[in-house]
Image (cartoon, rainbow, N blue to C red; front, side, top):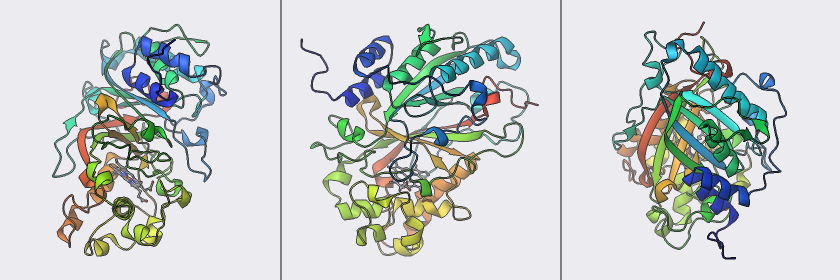
Length: 425
Ligand code: HEM
């Protein structure tokens, strides 16, 4: 029999099912992905760490000890439709039962599920009391050359798994459309509490961008994205040595200690010049640093770099190098380090939502100010004044990205993840 998805690889098929969502996409996905391989929880919910963002100890390491992110991602922008969270004991219990269902149904990790629930400034605005111990500003434009849409969702659920059907099943279960998840009865749902206002989807991992590059706005014809690249721009990102630790991004004091803050931007990619005109030497210079290009430090997607881009060891001073021509993205961003260590934990991934190549840039930090500081270092407006580095040109990868959305969230510790009040005791 002729199958409608004939010729499309399994992973590309699963990716489009995740992007479409809904019951029929889920059932199509279930025909393509083995469900018997998905493990139920190995820890009782109470034995899980207090940090929602404690994913790394459960993620598979790659050959070099980097934390390998799950391949499929689903972001649900949620609107609160309940009676009022100030006095919402029943709703809080219902939501907590929903999250515990997820924790029982799937082992935490790549082959099961990892997730975080965050709350935006719009959610906390409902309360009379101020948010205690955390600065959660409304999102704003962060560069002189962007005019992003500023998201105002009450909450953001980030779901990730190596199996597309896991993220889709969770979405269906939370909407109340599934009775069981991976053999576990669904105890609580979002019904009467949250409605899904927007879904964004994506993927990361060697081969996935190459599989999904055809007929996508922002990627030129000719399938230029290399087969082994985990991201559309062709390079590996998220080396262990270039990430903040989970400790570094965890809020230390106050009622939300154990939580973290999350910034989410949607960056649209335009890779025509990147692949059609820039040489490999230029791409490596712009992504890492000119030294990485001159000394041939990056092979292919950069898997040879092991667990560090070595950017602070090998690269020249960013301001110095900018005077000569091109400054690298990683080289600039590393200027935001504190005590020699990065201050943001990147958990970004690529997307073809609406047939547009994009990166959902999701990062975690102790404060939104840490993100803003890092983004300022990455933007490098100060460097644009020198040599042939312009505001956008030869200034890292700025020229290839446009910021479409921005949002800030607080990801509370697990104990406060269900409709938190702003000043818990
Ligand atoms: C399409 C968008 C982006 C791509 C493809 C990308 C890719 C990369 C790559 C390949 C590296 C070097 C490898 C590594 O250290 O993991 C890197 C480093 C880094 N990037 Fe990005 N990046 C993007 C956007 C951003 C944004 C928006 C920020 C936010 C401010 C950012 C912050 C960083 C930081 C902090 C580092 C590490 C610097 C250090 O070593 O201290 N990146 N990025």
